[in-house]
Length: 115
Length: 113
Image 1: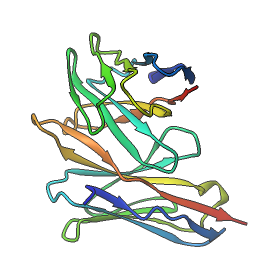
Image 2: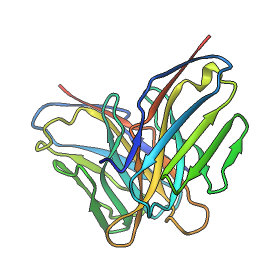
Image 3: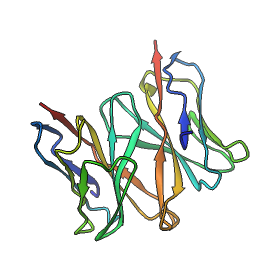
C-alpha cells in the first residue's frame, strides 16, 4: 500500500543537539511539506518542496533545515538554533494542486521532546 | 488577521445533536477548500472536500460561501466517535506560482452521552 512514513515516532533530544526527522513517501507525490503543531495549536508550515532539489521556507523556518535529494524523501533537521523544539512534527505530501484529483496525505508524525 | 480562522471551541454537545462549524478565510483568491479531522495525538485525515455547490457525505454537509469568504461543516445526529478536532484547510497561491494548503487552528468537538 502507498503511504507516507515518518520516523521515529518519538524522539528525545538533549539541548544543543541537532536531530533529523525522517519522512518517506511512495505515493509518487511531487510536493512535500513539514508542519509543526504545538498543544492546542494549529499546524504551522516550516518548509515545503514542490519538486526535487528545490524547497522554500514556510512561516517558521528559523532553526530548521531540509533537503530534497530524492522525490521520495524530505528529511527535516531541527538544529540547536531552534529555541523551543518540543512539538509534534507532521510531514505531508501531495499531488500538484490543479492537476486533477488533488491528494494531500499526512504521515503519522514524530513527537520531539527536548530533555 | 490570520489567513484562515476558526472558532477553537470546544463545542460540547449531546449525542444526536446537530452541530455546525464555520471557517473564514481572508484571501479572496483562495482556490480550494477542505475539512480535515484530527484525533488526539494523531495526524489529520481528510474528512471531505468542499465544493461551490455544497456537498454531503452521510451525516456531514459542507458548504462554501465565496461572497462572504467562509466555509462551513454541519454534522447531524452526532456520535461519540465524532469527538475530534476539525481543521479547515484552504489552498492559497504561494510565491513562485505554487499552491500550498493553509490550515486553521481547528475546532474541538466533544460529543457526550
